[in-house]
Image 1 (cartoon, helix red, strand yellow):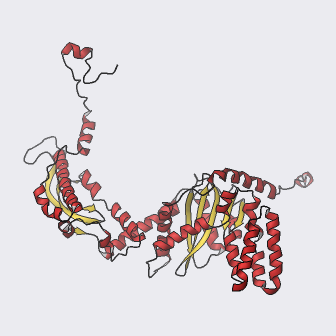
Image 2 (tube, one colour):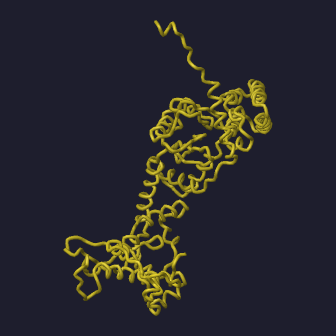
Image 3 (tube, one colour):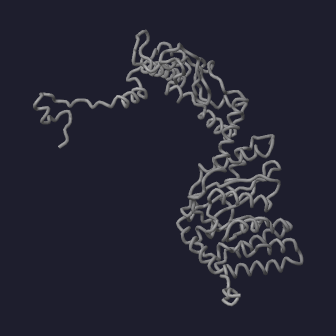
Length: 453
């Protein structure tokens, strides 16, 4: 039976003591705990906060919090240097007056007076742990990026902050256009570095989508991975003038250098760009190319007059819904033959990469997952989120700015990701890819006589 404060053990019965002795920490642990502990009670001068209460409950709470923060800092100074006016031989620091400090509060920096300490030998400055925590500017950069991605301009940054009262607002700083811009640039550079340096060796990707997005003349090629559990992962991005093979090879080679396994059979869902398949095959050992059916329909319609677009689109969608992919492909080849005389451009566009638009169907992917993989909608949705976040940008300075904004948008879109529809069938897709590669890859013929020669 476990003893508690109401149960008398043998020792308690002998000594008459009911409550057990309080456990004592080792001296070094006790000192560390004392430095990090908060005072049990803090007195707040409510009368001094009457003006803040008239400005609203939030302003009153902010004023109260700043008073509590001042009391906590004074408590930590007393722990390290002892009470004011009393000499303590065992102290690790000495008081060195007060100094003006800055703490982060609601997307701004607020000035306050803080105790200043130096080491007992007066050779170095001693920092208060609580002040180090509340004065960090990391939160400021994160708040600036969140508000900028929410389409709040630097000029109107201050209007998006919480009201903290006139007294606190008069002591605040860091809300000017230049300050916010510098913090946003630093935060987006960090986001770009985080995206491009992420380790990929732990990802087990079944499918990869590659697509391009244009920002004011700058083409950015982005890659989105889907792992075997259905989670989507923004992988990388590269900036250039067009969606060319050199750009895509650089993008995919970067994934390989960061540890992504390029030897496994992987489904690549791409748009109608002719530069993508050769670039993918140059980096990955066993890629299976699937072209987006929606892109194919849009490309063919672009070569047709308005009167013929509806009929051709209806026939193409019916062919793609055919349960037999060979029969569906035959219907589209027949359609291309019909269009060859009246609209040769549409016929050529339909024939280009036609077999690859039926890749998902030939793999036998279940319908629910097939709806996800037969188009590039998942990566296009991420691109749309990126473009929406930077809608207020009026002047793009250079390609680095484009990469920063796009990377920040991709990481912001990641927060909204859900598992792909039909993710429970991704295991079947992996097995189908391995079986497809085993059939299409021809083993080298072995000639004993040639080896002997």
